[in-house]
Length: 76
Image 1 (cartoon, rainbow, N blue to C red):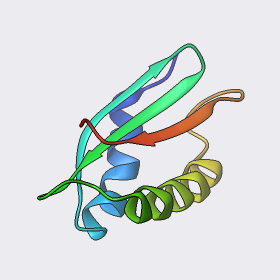
Image 2: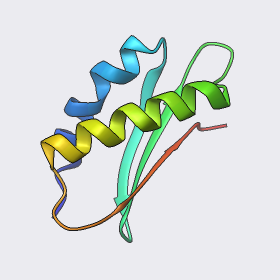
Image 3: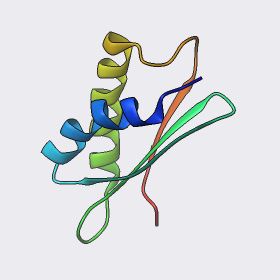
Image 4: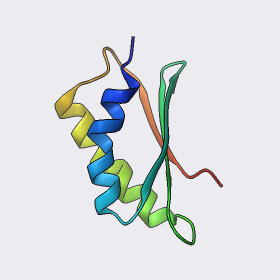
């Protein structure tokens, strides 16, 4: 079972440092979805940058057993 609260704690500092805010984290069907938001919306450059950073962090921390797909999105 994936501890979504632990994943939220891990990813929040990276998202906050990118002038975005964490909107939601879910894990369903082998996909970890991290939704981010920002004043005025989130651009593709921010999503790409945060995805790369979170990928490295999650590989190092390894909070999710087995393989999964990381998807960083915006709520809009």
